[in-house]
Length: 334
Ligand code: BGC
Image 1: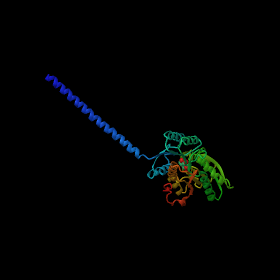
Image 2: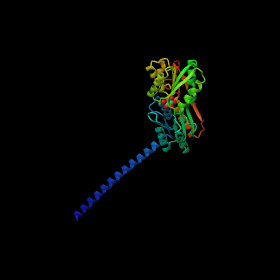
Image 3: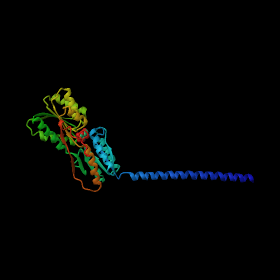
C-alpha cells in the first residue's frame, strides 16, 4: 500500500515537472514570437511610403554613378526609397527585364532610360497598370510616359555643330563616331549636328561609324576613319567614351591637329581637354537628372500635374571653362 502511494506521488511529481516545464517553454516561445511580430511592425512603420525603381544604362560608368547619386540623395529629404538598378555594361535586354520585374513587383513609380523603340510597349504596360513612368536621359515621346527629364539631345547636337563652325571658321572635313545607330539620343545628337554644319559650304561629313559606346571600338573606328580619310580635320563623338578612343587613334597616327569633340565632363575627358587633345566637351547634368526625376515622381504621387518635358542644361565646355566650380563633380546642382 505504502509502496503504491510512493509510486503515485512520484508519478504525480513527474507529471507536475513535465507540465511546468512545458508551460515555461511555451511561455518563452510566445514571448519570442510577440517580440518578433512587434519588431517587424516597428520596421514596417519605418519603411518609406514610396518605392521607386530607377533603371540606368551602365552601373559601371561615371555618368550613371552621378545619376544614381542625385536620385539616392532625395532619400535624405523625402519619404522615398529609390532602388537603383541596371546592367554593368550597356544591355537594353537586361534593362527591359529589370523594367518587367519592377512592374511585376508593383513598385510605385519607374524611372527609365528609353534607349530605343523596344521600351515603348513596356512603358505603356506599366502606365496601363497604374505605375507612372518617367523617362530619363533618353526620351520615348511616342509612349504613354508621364514626363521626360534630361538633355534636349537634338539641341546638344546643334551646340556641337555651332562650336565646330565657330572654331574652324566653317572649314572642316568631318568624321562622326556615334555611340549607337539605334539609340534615339545618339540619333538626335547626330541630327542636330548635321542640321547646323550642313548649312556650311566649307564643311563636309565624310564618314560616320558606330562605337557601341565603348572606348575600344571608338578607337578602332576612329583609326579606320583617319586612315581611310587622312584629310579629316575634325572628329565628333556623340558618346562620353568616344573622345577617349578618338584621341587615342589620332595619337597613334601622329595626327595632333584633328579638332575633337565629345560628350560629358567625365574626369578622363576633362584631363584630355586640359592636355588639349580634346577641344570641346558637351556637358550634361546627370546628377540633376537623377535628383529631379525623383522629385517629379513624388509630385505625380501627390496627384499634381507635371509638364510633358523637363530639359536639363547642356553646354559647350572648353579648356578655358575648366575653372568653373562644379565641373569636376559632374556639375552637381544642390
Ligand atoms: C549619355 C548616356 C550614356 C552615357 C554613357 C551619355 O552621354 O547621355 O545615355 O549612357 O553617356 O555612355
